[in-house]
Length: 77
Image (cartoon, helix red, strand yellow):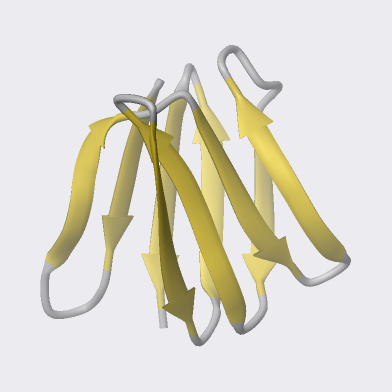
């Protein structure tokens, strides 16, 4: 699936990933390939993703996530 992480200033990351774990406002959740469509608010915390078998982490201050058609779009505050 494709992960796009964007802020008001730049595209932080765009690429193919195997999974994404996000700090949702109701708790952490993981998105895998072919996940159902979802829109959620994100709290401050750690965003994690696995790309090419390597786990990457990023601290975020919050934002929004939209999952649709195997694309995970994260808009950071």
